Length: 415
Image 1 (cartoon, one colour):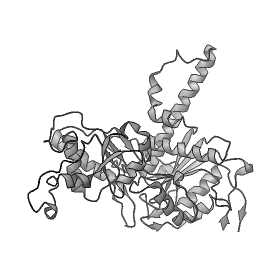
Image 2: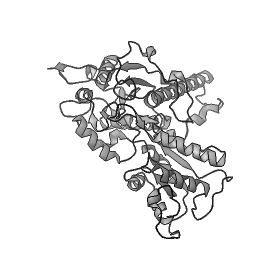
Image 3: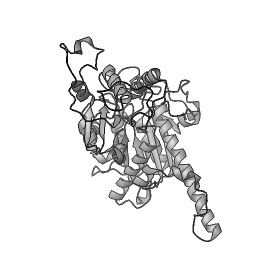
Image 4: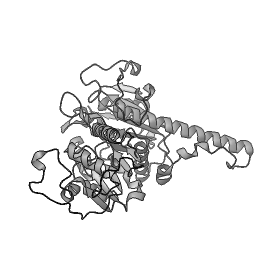
């Protein structure tokens, strides 16, 4: 059956969809069969989406346009780069670092990615290694054959950005630690007692991810575990991050909600987008992140309503006398993107990736067997409620069907 979806009653949608990619739409480079079926329900006969859709991936090794082209090919529907959110996309908002000399770690066109995000003075790990050839010593075959001196032609590094897991972990770990312990000047010796270290921003905290193999593979979160533990072993102190982005960070979901709102405006959909649905395969990133953001939205809405009631009670329409203790929650990224219209973010877990790839779907979501070991990042607390999915379904096609039923969004079905 081919489904053509039209909005219930002809009205504009009041919900948006956030799709994970790996383990939901693809396994490595292999499309998951249910993906095309799901997206046939999401576009009309002109190939336009009938609801706002954003692809929220923790990948960070390519430009948004490249990922959009890949998705268009896989799903058989036109995807624009404005529908794609990479783990590094929120870095556009960190303008205070855009004119600083930043070291970037990862793989793929990291220099181009950084410049596309607004960074103007970018240094790669390879550039450091070429300028300081005596620092990368683990691989004997890569050591300088002849005595060499540093080629000090690079500016002092002022911040470090970790895009994703690199190719040569030993090289990246060594040089990032060197940068942190020399305050960005590799000509000097380590200063293990100097605090604080340079600003450190990391994208993608996934400990593991699902590719073609039978079991999950190491992700950037595993690299971060290595970096954090090496730094602590050397200095006795914790690595401190200025920002962690990518799922499950609230920042990532707020940016995705901003992109959802932008699509609604572009399509002249008049109803505000009040509900988000996040479809993913990983309890510790997709489900945790969606539930965490939903808690933020609910708390924000509660405070908003309590202030409105207080204004009415005083009859002044002013909130000047109200407690401002929680106002720091409305932080810089919210003012940058404007307040969200969404009031909830509902999580849906699929069984085609990291979670239960070979077992039957539990009848009830509360039968979900949660991990006994927390696979989330060090700086995120483990709360069992945050890894409890709102729904568990077999695949992404079932997820879309469930959402449409809940939103009463079914139109006509044609054979």
